[in-house]
Image 1 (tube, rainbow, N blue to C red):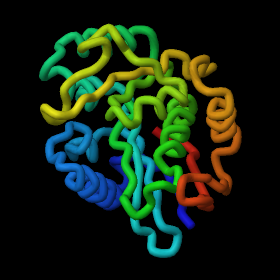
Image 2: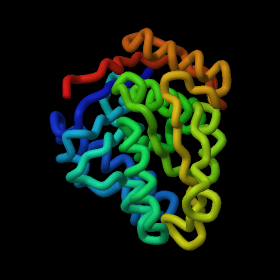
Image 3: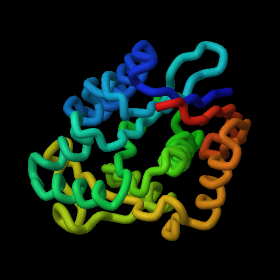
Image 4: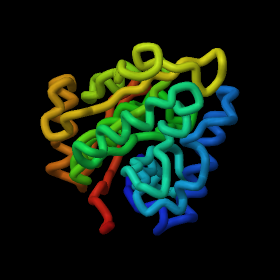
Length: 230
């Protein structure tokens, strides 16, 4: 059994370190050592919300994600990553910032021993729900090829105005990343119907117990995704 909780990065540096270590270990397993979302300056960013998946009995962190709300003192991870090959990312984020509150869903990971339990999709849905609860108007994500369709199912659209129709060589020469964005967090027009319903259910019931079904069967998860005070 697992539990999901939410906290501001600056209010729990110990948990931030556990998150960062777990994330780095997963990336290392895939031969990736340099990813902007794995840098640890976010520990001290007051506009970062952290989501962790923990084993109920041991409290071991086995997965998570972060939401970065635009902050004039910190670049979004997608800005740091993409600007190496695409300077238009800065103007793009600025455009969305001028329209309302924007930010990024990033650093999504789960340990290999819980792979196949549906945690990645669950975190994606919770991330979108949290963005809505934070009164955000839009949110970016930078995806590996195997997660693009998962993000699209939750309402993200490929942002084709940058890169090669939204794709970039990142974080290694043999890997491709895709930039996506949700522009309508209030309605999620492009989300699959069932997933849209589940996202708004998280918003309506931020404390609950659910059973997630993955390739490895059913997993019971308790969650508390109430937004801490900013």
